[in-house]
Length: 145
Image (cartoon, rainbow, N blue to C red; front, side):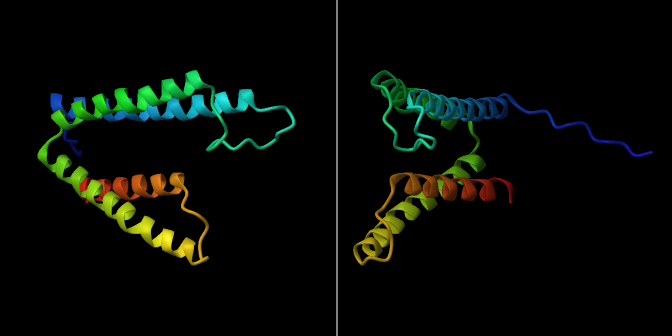
């Protein structure tokens, strides 16, 4: 007969950490879904493939999303930094530094190659995705490896 050890009990700091991460993920998901819905609702019927990245948005919606991303998410992030432990804080910092170098080195390289005719112009959404992906992967590796 094997005995299973009970699940480790999470402390208040770890529970707050997970709640805040879930809240940020939920806000991001709702922001993305609502942006897609707004774009699709205002797309004329003949346009079968609207550009979700660059289609114009109603002013009220653009202001709402800017406030959420520029005020609400930083407040949640500030709170997250207050509840995480040293290990996770260091993993986050390592990811942030890797993200900085991804943008700080990658964008000029891309820009020079674009000017030389080897690449298309720099696209902000590609830069953002690369920055977030590198930071997230480094954070995951440093936190769980």
